[in-house]
Amino acid sequence: MNRVMPYFAENNGDWELIPEWVNFLIQFGYHWRKSQQQDRRIALVSMPSSSPGAGLLALGAMINDLGNDQANDTNSHNEAVFEYARQYLDHCRPCELAKCDPTLKRCGYDKKSTGIIRSIRRDNHLYVVAGQTDYHAKKLFLMDKNGKGTREIDSEYIINLYADGQPPAVSSKGETRLRCAIYQDLIEEVQIHTANLSKSYSSLVLAGRAKGESETKATYEAVHFCRANESYTLAELLTIHGWANSQVSRTSFYNTRTEQPNRSSGQPSLVVADGDSSFLKSVDTFKKSDVIGVIDRSLDRDRLEVIGQKIAMLKSWYQTDPEFKMRLPIPVPGISITILKKQ
Image (cartoon, rainbow, N blue to C red; front, side):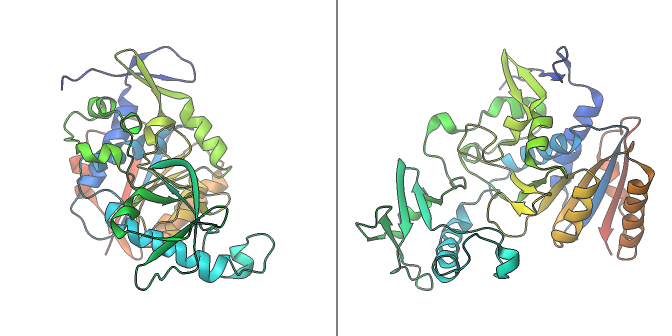
């Protein structure tokens, strides 16, 4: 595939070749995923002003995942469906609370399981997990939403099913596959695994800004990339479920304001945090995940001091990691980076 140099525009500005700072952040995210380091790492990227830096960094990490044939949710998909069914039957269906409140109930879940199941084979048809389901024996029974037609689902068909409100593990429609070219143009060296373009992945998480998902999405919608007369917003390229038309979602979203993930998943391998509040919360919430925070250095002094205190505290268990910096392009003036790895 011949590379086309993409153009970049922000906040309705003129198109320009991708600026050095944008390219650096995308490359940073891409190279982070290439490390063979097994111990947990935490990084803090300090920008001179407010920026979409976290989204750009997450985009680089996502492109790296597209080149990894193991970076998909298909292997764990059936287990996730049965866990969703178990939560519904054992906890959510018999729950006496009129409104779901996991904090009050102390059930240990992040969000409610409605028991509603969709199929990529029948777009507008809804099913509900039936009581005959045996998640220990891995036998799934579904009934139509109207309560009729209960039947056992063949184990090989479960890959076509997904919980309502979450992306499917695999898209069956060609038009919902991700467009390879724009990602290839942004990182020329990546060898994209074609099958991943139609598979979702939940191990990369973007932790949004303190004010919530709407502000985070709006910030990334103001960033555009263009190649061969096709324009894409950063929000679309990140493929967060509900942000783009594609069924495929390669990045999960964690709402820092509500402390809710947009889908159920295990411990992610990498969390990219947008802002100081998001970074502080992510480091403590995702205790086994790598965390990269992107902060604005023009914040008021008190907030910067809190970040400084957190980094100082982390250095009791972590040490600086100069090796990763050596693999990166030369940092752009004005961007400072601290990288720590678990001792």
